[in-house]
Length: 129
View 1 (tube, one colour):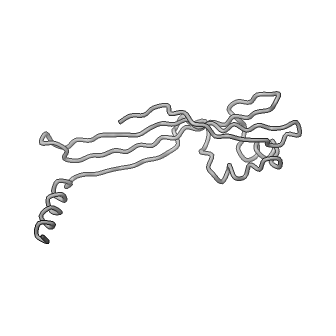
View 2: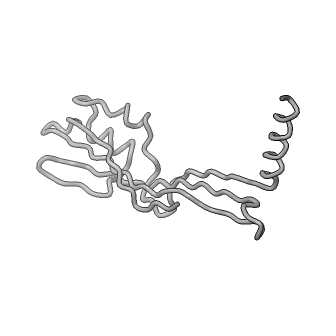
View 3: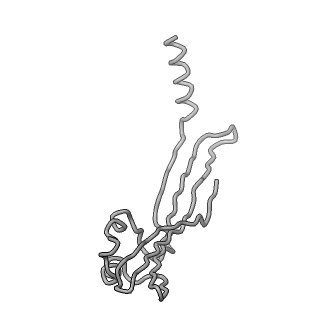
């Protein structure tokens, strides 16, 4: 039984010789701003954080609306997975998979210019297998 298991393991290792996988997750170059992470969202305290605090922390928004005041911040995140290896008798081949997602942070303020609520939404811009 030990010999059979060793033969199976050796055949799997030889079949994967020359295989390579690479995973990349990064902010898109065309993204209008840096990624807004969980720490930034935790700093938005409803009823306490003011519009001045938000502007100092995040800068100018991509869009804003009045009555009630809403600020919109956008960023684009790209995730890629590349696989290369001897996948066929024809030789070395590669494949790629991933997605591009646009995130939007909506921040709503009250008449005293304090955060009343916020929400992060996302839209898949591109997915490829």
